[in-house]
Structures are given as C-alpha cells and as structure tokens.
Length: 323
Ligand SMILES: [Zn+2]
Image 1 (cartoon, protein in one colour):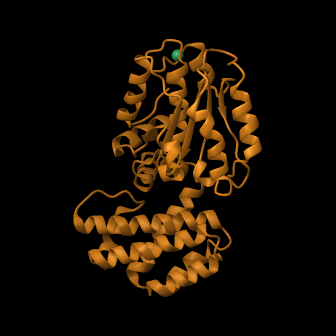
Image 2 (cartoon, rainbow, N blue to C red; image 1 turned 180 degrees about the vertical axis):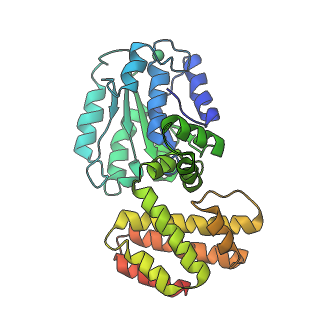
Image 3 (cartoon, rainbow, N blue to C red; image 1 turned 90 degrees about the vertical axis):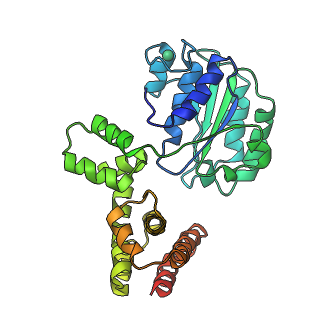
C-alpha cells in the first residue's frame, strides 16, 4: 500500500498511532484528483493494521482486506447520483451503525467522501454528525473529505484533525505512471504527466482517456483561441461541450489554471496547469493586473455553472467579456 508524496501528512497520523492517540474525526481536504479517498483508505490501514506501527504492513488480515476493498469495518458512505447525502441515510448508515461493535478488529471507520458536493443537505447532515464527533464511541472513527475545508461548520472543523493533501512532485507522479502503466509508451506517459502535473488523479484520468483528457484538450483550445484573439475559434471549441456540464465546468476551470500559470510565469514561479507552453503564450498578452482580471472572469463562469445558470449563457457571456 503506497500513498505518493504528502509525507508530512502521513507522518502526522503515523505519530498519533504510535503514541496510541488515534484520531476519531478527520477532515481531508484538497483539490479533485489529489487522492483524498486513497488517503482515507491509507489512514484506515494505519488505524486498523494489526502491527500498530503507524505504517500499514500490507500483509496482515486488516491490510489485505482494506487493499481488496473488502474490510467490513471500513465503510464508504454512498451519496445519491447528484452527490447529496440524506439525513436518513446518515442516521442509518453511520449513527445507528456506530452503536454496533466492529466485525473484525477494535475499530470501525466511516468515510464520507466528497462532502462538498452535498449542497442540498450539508448543514443538516453536519449537525447530525456533530454528536458523533463530539462524543465518539471508542471503537469508531469518522473521515470526511471535501475539496475545501470551508465546506464544514466551524464546530466540526474545531473538533477534527484537518489534513491538507498537496500535489506531488513531477518525479513522484512520473514514478506513479510508470509503475501503473508499465506497458505504455514513454511519450504517452510524458503527455499525461505534462497535462496532470503533480495531480495523480488527473494523470491517471488522462491515461485512461476519461473526462480530464477531453477537458484538458478543450482548455488548450480555449487558451490558443485567446492567444490568437479568435472569438469564433473559442465559440466553436465551447460548442463541443454543449449540454455537457461537467466537461464544460472542468475545461473552464483548467483554462483558469492556464491563466493563473500565465500570471505566475510573469511573476516567476512554477506551473500547475495542463499546458505550460500555452500558459507561457497567454502570458505574452497579459500584465499582472489584466491577468488577474481575466482569471476572475473565467472563475466567475465556473461559479455560474455551479449556480445552475444556462450553459449557453455562460459561454456567450464569457466570450463577450474576453473579446
Ligand atoms: Zn497490516
């Protein structure tokens, strides 16, 4: 069992296990693709491993079951198809279940992933979880994940151990790709590495030609259209995402990252976006202040999508503002 990078975070929880001060409530936060669910699984193994060294041994019964996704006491709570958790489900799957002793070892772990996507019921659900967090039975631990820690009520944040997941180095993500895809061409790996940078989830999604592959492609087209000043090209590129909300949202987000990188390039710093060459050309058209304005305009479009505005309205108003 390996979690790439983030050694400081892994050491923090390992130290707690070694000292016998296992945390009962944790928040894992960080951008999509950085491995929040994988980290939750790793921490579960730290807490459940029969060797109790803080580093999952990888061969005891608990580690093996976790690795196979078959440990009966590691419960990943399921949201509905829109990402919402419902009060009744949390009561049944977490609160009521927490009263029952573990099946295997001495601890039961509940993971509630992507909590930030549960927009409709967030506050009610957190208020229900608060009781469990305030007075957890000895045999339970709760791990919440979200892109931002601000998703949670301050009463929850103050009672949880917060762990922030960061991107890994290019070398670490390269190592991950080579280990995971030993039969692929190096050129293919290099392309995924450039697109995903230190975000392993993105690199993997690119290799698998999942949504990120297409979003990165669209973001590059938007960047090129902006650099050449061709509004028609931008509208044409955006039209390809017509009716595909998640694709459009991610593409615009990646486009905003290219602009952020362009500003970073002007100020001198490291790129995180999906195409360093394009962000360098964007920087040729910007000053730091016009760059900041452009970044705001694009992120505003992303927020409009999140607020359920019509996608064609978002695209048209973006183009109107950019040209
Ligand atoms: Zn073990």
